Image (tube, rainbow, N blue to C red; front, side, top):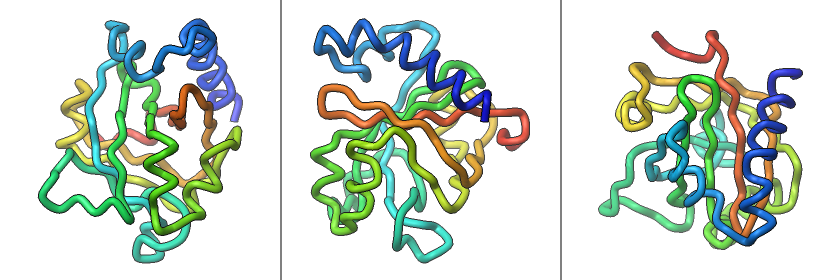
Length: 163
């Protein structure tokens, strides 16, 4: 828990100057050489409940052919080495989802509990400079908000990296 709080504070402190000046955290993070980013498709819902309920069912590289805006959004996934992943998604995209619970739990909250683990596949993590898929365990994760975007902070520990 202490690691999660410290990670949130470090990300928030880094983003504070950009938030106060009305700049997009996505653009600012991608300018920072420590952070790598890629655009992903997020299928929302609990993977243990056939993608219904709250959570992230899966995450993959963007594929326009099968995109369904009623259950999916695009998002930016950023990584600063092997310490933290940051998922940045537009609130307007969350608002359009059929599952209103996703928007309600993320839009203006400080944290969210994801009830099932999320595996970020190798095809995504490679674009972030990683050599293996990453499993994010179920649990509480910090949220922050700026300029219509929701930022979900996922600290990565040695136990969460698949090697």
